[in-house]
Length: 562
Image (cartoon, rainbow, N blue to C red; front, side, top):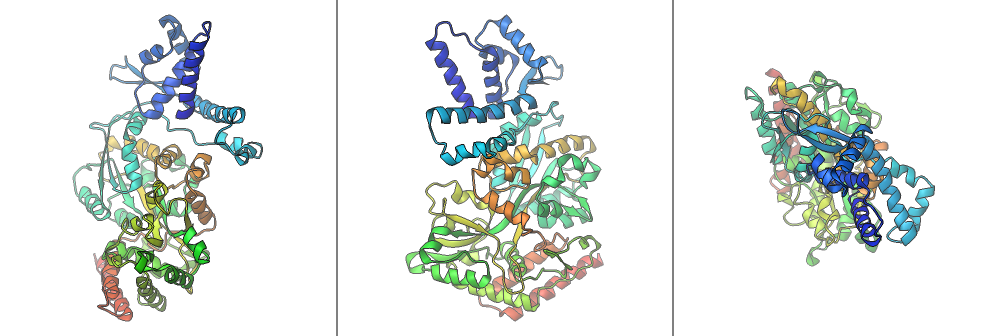
């Protein structure tokens, strides 16, 4: 849209300079400024619109009133007196302009040539123009600004998607009409701060980001407010959220947040390296090990695979996902079509299942992976596993989609444009799945009641299709909504969205590998400690499984006795 706006601004200048009798078009000039200000997060006033019209004041004022009466411009009070307003494009104007932008781009390409290819031209006749017309429009402004003393306070994780939100703060502040104060922490510190905040008399935050496995704990401890008490859930279109991400936001059939990120862990692999070695993309753990062995060349600085193996939380997540790859959830969940049921977890009737035959196969698989991993693998966690992959030193890496910008947005990365995306290869007894990670955004249970309505409205904005598309356009590679993944503008940015959507429709996106029970954080930590000792050669696989099982059982008993 900004490109089309700039083109029309320049074209208007040229026409007015070249033809003496050419007169400015005040409606167009005001519309261009209004749209540019909205997209760039700048405040636009009636005075600035009149100034941009390039016609006498009385004429411009009359045309501005016509646009207001036609419902093309929305006014928002800037002061308590209501005598000063900011001006914003209405939803009607944004829809009209989205369609016009698409048509202008095609007209320019058809008449003068350009980057549009024959295939794109053919799309016009086979539905492309219809899809463009259905593109999600830019973020809208709320008709009434949020009234929040001190502004909106948000607690988030310090990952690429939430950092995109921080970079777009000006646009979101314009949208909600209030200042935004965002604090970002690492995953462990985020958990600590959310728990600490729950002990305060009144929450310091209006909205908090919650890792999916914490949902049960935060619900049971009263840290999060059930959203159905604060809002009409149907108004956010639950069916538009990826099924796994939406289910993961629930505990005891109640939603405790809205998905802000649905980021499955996938296998990233170098398509060019696989092609050169004559290898097929691996669908099984045996094929994965064979590919890792074939591509492991440490003497030339190349290693087969990277994964989360740092002690504690990082490796703990890997253990639970590897168990799932071999068809074994970490708890005795009842099997259902496509995986395992988690609907009963709020009843607290579950037992740990680590020390099993599938658990032994998973442990042995991790030991084999170690042989084809970089020498510092036992200190690699979330980002460290993807950085060497982006640098071209790793042939494969397990990684969340939110980490894809490390190579997708780096034109110098050898993995740029050469990465394929797969669900986890399956071990014997398992099926290919993509374990779902990510965050919901929820409202603290101890938030002052007078702030809840505004927090709900901000939550709607942050998780809306318009906001999610904006995140993607500014570098995010996570997406919780089907509509955003289907948006033609989004699909052009990365193949990852089409791949994830296909996995979702095949029911490969699953959140049961890390069930959101209250004890999960402790069990993840236990697995991350015991299996780290095994990878260091301090314990055998059977001993590791027994110790992890015993410690996890003790955690379950402790929680049930309190």
